[in-house]
Length: 554
Image (tube, rainbow, N blue to C red; front, side, top):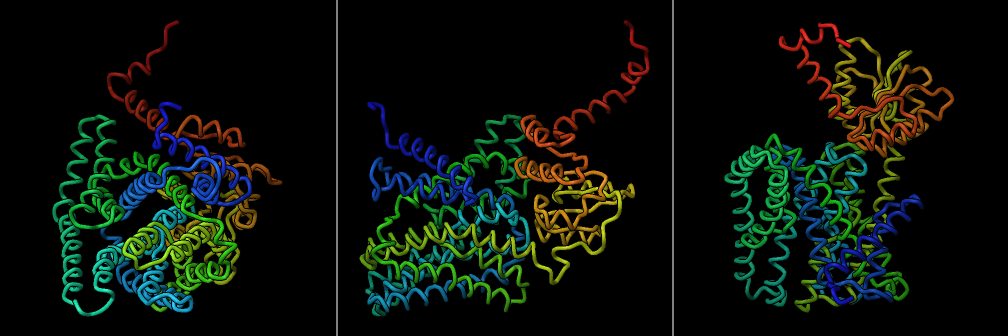
C-alpha cells in the first residue's frame, strides 16, 4: 500500500480487531474489555502477523485517558472532592504503602535489590484510571457515594505517582543512598511547589475563566465551536499541566472538567466528549495488550500468580480494611476494594522509567504487564460477583427488598435518575401508587428517604422483578437513558405470565424503534415532547387562540 502510514494502520487494525473480539467477548458473556486486550495481543510484537506501532499506540491511548478524566471531572464537583478527602487521602496512602511492601517482599524472594523491589511494589499499588472509571460507569456507580470515594481515591493515587515519577530519578542518581539527601529534598520540595501551584492556579483563575469562556462560546450558537472549545480545554489544560507543572495529563484534564462542571453547559460538554472518550479508551486497552508476552505465563507461572495475588487480593484487602476502619459500610468497602483490584497506565510509566534508569529489569516489567492484563480481565468479573451478592443479599433486607408489599394496581417506575425523580414527584402529588426499581443503592436510599417504596436491582432480573410484583401492576414506566438496557427490561416485562403495558423514554427515533420492536407500547422522545408542549403554549397565545376556536373551512 503506497499510501500506508503507521497512524492509519494502527487506527484501522486496532478498531476493527477491537470490535470483532469485543463483540465475541460479549457473546460469550464476558466484558468487551477482554476482547480489546486480546486484539492488542494479536497486533503486538509477540504474535505473528501485523505489528502495530508500539510508540504510537500508547500516545493514542493517552488521549483516551485525558478525555475520560475530563468527562469524570465534568461529573465531579470540588464539593464532592472535599467531601471524600477524609477517607480518600488516608485510604489511598495506606493501601499504596501496603501494596508496595508486598511487592518489595516478593522482590526480595526473587533476589532483586531493595530499589527494584520497592519500585515493583509501587507499580502494583496504583489502579488504572480507564479500568476503574469504565467499571464504575458500567455498574452505574459513578454518581454514587461509592463512586465519588473511588474517584477521590484515584486522584490521591495520581498525585502520589506524580511525586514518585519526580523522585525516582533523583533517588536513582543517588544510588538509593543518603549522601545527597539535600538533592532529594530539593526535588521533593520542587514537585510539591509545582503541584500546589497548578492546583492554586486552577482554583483561583481557572474556576472563574473556564466556565466564563464556555458560556461565551455557547452564546455564539455554533455547535462546532462549542465542541472544539470543550476538546481544546481538555487537551490544552492537560498538556499545559504536564509541561509547566509536571502534573500528569490525566490529573490536568480532571481539574479542567471539574471546573467546567460549574457552568450551566457542563452537561452538554460531557455529552460532546463522550464519543471520542469511548473510542480512545478502546485504544488504551489495545495498547496494553500489545505489550503483553503470553510466553511468561508458561515460563514463570508461579511468579505471575504471586504478582496477581498482590494486585487482586493483597491491596484489595488493605483497601477494604481501611474503609471499614474509617467507619464506612461493608458495601462501600467491597466496592472500593473491587475498584482497585487492577493496575494500568501509571504502572507502565513507572516501570518504563525504572528500566531507563537501570533500576529495574525486563523480567520485572513482564511480571507487571502480566499482572495488569490478568487483573484487567478479572476486574469486570469481580464487579459482577459484587452485584450478584448485593442483589441476593437478604440481611439486612432494606437493601434488596421494599419495606412493605407494593400496592395493587401500582406503577413500576424503572429508573430513578433525573427523569425518574421528577416523575416520582408528579405521581406522588397526584396520589398514584408506584414502586421504584433501580440498580444504584444511593438512589434507592434517596427514594426511600422521600417516602417511596423501592426495590434495588436490575429490573430485567427475575428475582428483582418479583419483589416489585408486576402481576399486580397497572403499567410500567421506564426512564432509563440507555435504550439497550431498557430494551432488556421491556422484553422481560412482556415475556412474563402477566404482561403489562410499558411506556419508555428515548433519545432518538432509532431508540424508539428499538424499544417498540421489543414490545414497548409507547416510547417518547424528549425533543418531541418539548416541541408538543411549546406548540400548545403557542396556540394558547391570544393571536392564535382564535384560530383554534374558529371552524376549519373545507
